[in-house]
Length: 477
Image (cartoon, rainbow, N blue to C red; front, side, top):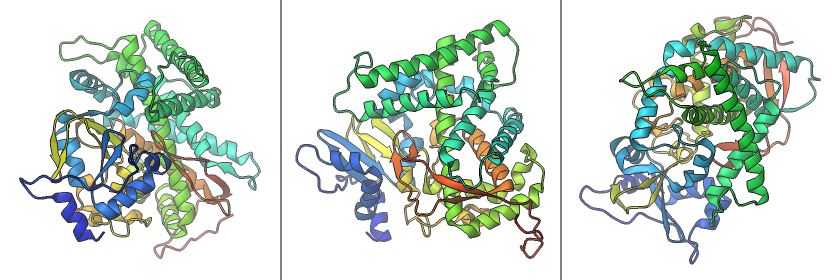
């Protein structure tokens, strides 16, 4: 479909509502099989053929995919009171409890207000040294491994971000437990995804093999979190971490501190959200850099110019401008939070199309970020599209890696700081290369994961100093 037709289909006519376009489906099941097999391909084709609002049917259920900034804004900003987390979050609610991701209404508003000070700019500055230090520890371990051996960069980023989450959230170094705890997190997330996709949802207490494995993993994670909370209650010291901040915050009356169960729910939410999304974003960033040597060289030039041989700090972040654009562009092409779902509480109209009460609407960041109406060369990897000059006139809801509106991710500044510091620390010392013949396969689960990891090799590089002509003054080792 041409850009003009996409525009016409997305905006609609004031005062006139129509039925949203829908691709052909199968009898009874509608589009269910295609969406389960290849949701990214189906949504991409839907945008191309039908526009920014596309209706899919799964049996009797209506599922609207939104791929335009104005229709996304309608749900997230203009009428958030009419949209609640979809039924597909039920599995995640079993895992996370009543944390910020899964709670609703006045309870969510209270929790959001209580938690917000923990993510204040000044608080985050204190975590930068931990992020850079733990990344340097990882690089020291890499230096002891045969450089000709490949390794899974997604696995490495998962271990690293988990260790950072442990220290910044709990003031505990979970390095020794990272593999076992990461595996338990993977089990509970996989269970939540399968629960959401199941036509018949068996309660978690039914002793199926999947439920039994999920129960063991969840109990182990709960023991860890509740144990740390209990120790902290006895300790009473301010450790300068996120848990200390969450334990101390109160509402306007000076009361209303979180009890142990609510602390557990918020902490578990931060663990899983902080681990999965940042690890995925960084793994994809290294994958893309390996495929685009020109971007990689420009990134190296900035990092060498700003940092030289020293470790990055919080104060360096504003000067690592291109580094930030690289992360942003990676999250545009491969957004870890690739799809956000809401259920309509009442009838509505989006982009001129009728949205019946009870329908599910999905703000699909994956297709939104590739919409040719709002992005030149949408499939290309071009970090400079995030420069002030090129982004000043862009609709701000064309780019939603952290969601939008009142429920925008509370940890977005933390995640961007972490990603920039890790990327700068790694690139300062190594150039990573995909193994020949590797083809990335995506797993659009709760987050957008690499299905089979991302195998790479590393090559050590010196702290190259670049002159004004952009040419290196010292060669790689």
